[in-house]
Length: 473
Image 1 (tube, one colour):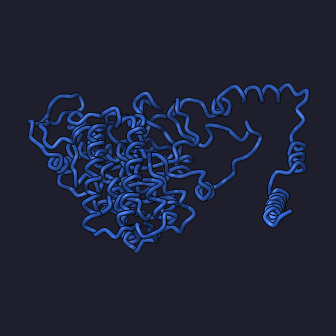
Image 2 (cartoon, helix red, strand yellow):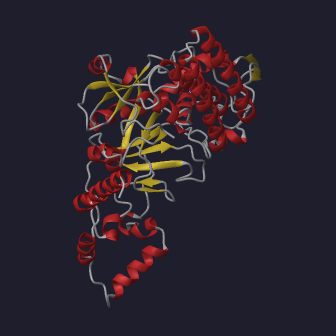
Image 3 (cartoon, helix red, strand yellow):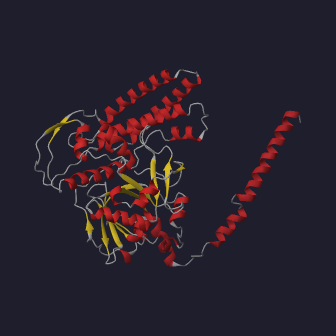
């Protein structure tokens, strides 16, 4: 055997040996498989087990795990409830954060006018600029990290997540003062606004292409003004793609406010999106008027945290929150609801939700009994293992309190249309709320001085890859 063959044989032997060691140490060996199989119950001749196996194999798990003892009528009476408004529908898009934020915003407008005026806002309009700003955030982020290798964690972050539908309340705070707002009838939804997947796929591909080009320009030592000029040209192409899919943003329009019956209550006026937003808010600045609180039992309470790079605009604000126990978050929510004002809030809505009834409760489905096992993880453990996290924003509208002022149940206005849940609403038991509610946006006037001071402490910086910091979609 020549030297080359000897070397190949030796390399092969080492590889086989290493593979054998891996299999023996951690893989599923035949012996292990036999042990696993032996541990399975012997259901031979057990008609009940055969019936259960057949049922699970041919039916939806939720239908079989539904807890009949918890399937009775739902109490729909609430001791504290804000005025109802029209239900919105985000369709096949991840814009729940925008719908929830705008639902709270238009509710505040009605509240300011003693509920005599109402308005539905265009999500499509502000979504246009949200997408444009996120494209700039990605491209500028690529420029800022252009000297780092592609394997760098931040570089991967920008290329892996160039753009998305999701977000947080901070997006409205950064976008609306800059670009304004318009009524839904002035700038209605397009197909791509309601079905964002293909548009997002095409723009994502374009951004990755542009990101590589900008990195090459930096590697070739192009001047900063040349890369800035090229980035502007790239955004011009993105802008054109957005106008084709979402429409060309309106610059001026005429509008008169109506009441809930549809009757016109004000004289028609000429607006820009910015002047309309100013009238909508009464000139009140959203920035600095609220705090975001969150329940993350993994981290120290009464500390402020900031999520790096979790923002909608490059020059905007990162998502910052004060971590509080659920009992304190509940009291903040109750205070604002008692004043007739809705709140932006977010949840892990996929857990224990009975979609047909619009009811969320920890006892809706008994998966453990169906699968002959248990699911004992705590809220902190579920977060740490990516088993649970904030995934969907909804507008908190009501709470039912007992004689001692403790919450019995809550109600949210969802953005899945009136055919979803209880005519567009979801009722949540107090125990479900504590397990699967995560963040809340509260006006500062309902927050104690102690908590406001805690919110202003220097935040602990955390990474956007953290399992809890998923965008609301």
